[in-house]
Image 1: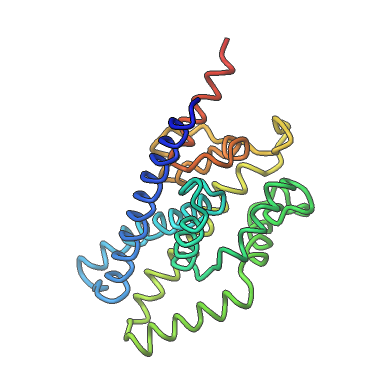
Image 2: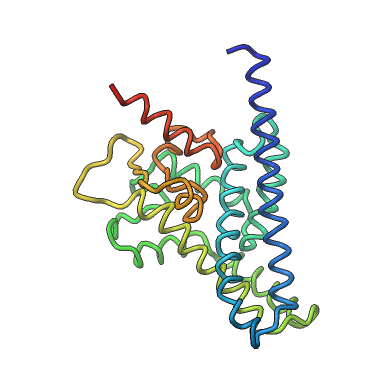
Length: 251
């Protein structure tokens, strides 16, 4: 593969990655502002609330996946400053997380996957969802994140006049649900212990969902073994990466 072709592929990946990242962030922000400040919780507005919560939950998952690609440099290949800037913004929008604090833990996950040194894994509860989830959250949601979110909540209420009910329903609930969704499809199902052994040292499995179900559940992050085998592959190319690897196994 020539240098020019590699450069062209990197440019294409950057354009698509940044375009999708921008779309996710803009749509999330628009729905967030509308739902928290303007959506009426009565009549038709109340009936539409579950759809808004579902959309905000899914888009919140997308914010995290954008930041995740930025950590691996696959959002904008060869442009570390762009990756850092977009990743930091995505994580701040997601839950007030700071990428520079989270990234080292994520790389520890890749280096020590499924062991006691893996911050995403629970040695004590390798098959139990809720105890593992609780341990996972305690490792990532600390005092700094709690204080920042508390300050943001009071700023929304006291300075911006956000209705408390809307704030809880359209910000707190999607944030919590998205953390469960990310953990279920991006950590627990890929890395839990089962009777069948893992295929290799990456200790990761992929789901068998089709393209749409994979997108809706976790932005294709459920194709998790492919991610561990190729961390530089962005989320939107994981289905193609999975197909490519499956084709290689066929006689």
